[in-house]
Length: 218
Image (cartoon, rainbow, N blue to C red):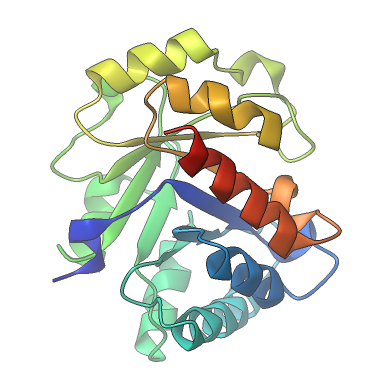
């Protein structure tokens, strides 16, 4: 059974070298150990080779935790990095793209049916559920990693999106621990965070608190 068939986006970490003051794989290990179910490597500053190195180290710590078959490791935007990493024997499970990035049909063609393809979208009409596994929506609050306030999504909009979406929805952008109970009430399938874990003084504690809050409010 491929990881695509049992994809879990309930606790989703987005991380790159520019988001933390320690090695990315240390934060990935802490988050996955505490129950994070999906990891996306996203960097606007790293070279392809640097991203491949981060993927290799992240894949290794996920494997050391015995979670390679249950925790998806994805890459933001860079289909080339996914393909190169796989060619080098690194277990990368798929890609996440925006509507102005590489088209999802191209991602699916090159990655195959067993891979995960996620898409940033606010409208279900923009999504082909035959090609896309989940929708990423946000931002919940403007943040340093996404400062455009016009992109803010309300809790009511999340609730409506979840109702009409034929595929799972994960919401993030400035999500903090206090936001989790309200997000659970929208019936969204998961939350994603960057700074709440990557920028925390104690990433493992931050991850534990977020995952615990999610499950306690279901």
